[in-house]
Length: 264
Image (cartoon, rainbow, N blue to C red; front, side, top):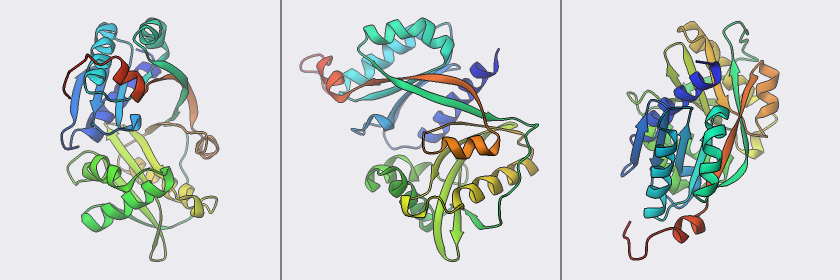
């Protein structure tokens, strides 16, 4: 198995860990694919991840059918190998290509050096979880009540998903979520509100957190980069592994394909 497909399988596991505690979530999974439908009206919270696998076409077809049955928009991300087989199927099912998502990795041989010391705490307990959620809502311009239903609920001591907050004195400035699996950890929800960006807090948080995980036996990190975050990850030594294809079933597309009279 090549590195891209290995990391995509880890992304499948990470999405399961991140979504399984969302109240009312509908999840379907195989070793190479996962569908998570929260029921929220934003496609960002109804997600499909597909690595290369023997049942990819069947899983994709059933996933789109479930989203349509519930009238929900859906974002799908596929590995390059999966895209070769499933891209035409996705188009036929009514998904539209919406660009690519860079899959990046920081390998074990790349050193992690904290840029400067900052106070960091793990988000545990209602007060700190709420602070992390506030940072994410401000950074990603998402409704706070949606994040409370879909993000805050995953931040527990036993979820396998860990969220960390960086502080400037007594003021929270940045947050990041880490999902470790063996000696590899996924980085997600790197959240610094716009008014606190370009002040080095995100870099300080991420490097200090990764250094701590390295001391605990995690040697490799992976993430899906956004245009805003890509310069930071490049500067830290993350390397591009693959451009994943991204697809969208819009709310209108989901409703258009919904059988008349079917209930969600």
